[in-house]
Image (cartoon, rainbow, N blue to C red; front, side, top):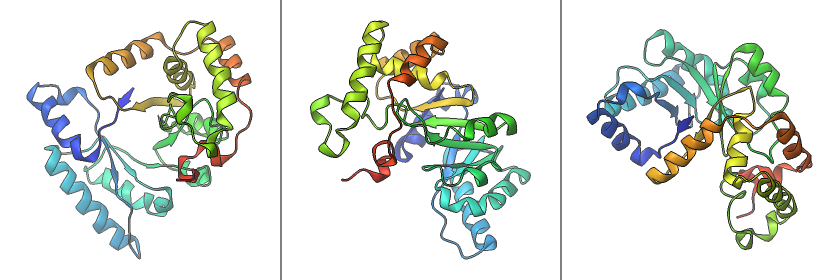
Length: 245
């Protein structure tokens, strides 16, 4: 399981681990901001400058993994992969938001993408990921809170999610687990997922996430029942970038 820190707090959190002597126990994954470059030469300069700045601020000699922040920059993946040979990063990859770049993403060693009980956009990618040994980091297991927030807070534009969520909540009650546990363990049940990326605000949340992770995947029967609750949903519901503000 991976834990995410915002850019503003990342360095402070890592320095805290360093003071505790735990920096060697964590894997640091960062991203290259959106690249505005006309060619590979310009892109290489941008990527190198970004990596060197991050390494200096983190007090590291090498990042374990670095991802392209947006899928539109996948054309620069070979440039980022050059940084592995230079010793600045251990591996290169991309953060996806849609299923439109899965063919190109198959060339990446690491892929971060959204994955949760409602989102089936990446089903075709799982066999490729396992066959190519791609390490997949899953984010948005709670769909930016949509799966857990009070029902009254769900706007009209996302109202179609409510009946599906009620079915999942009923199933969670039946098997005596929380909705958050059902969502997290659903993601952990996918053998193509290497790690689940989640944020924490308190030590209590951290301990709860560790408890849920220790419970392991859902049983095959329960996994089938979860999937049976969820119809094929349009991208406008499962992709936050398409939500009406």
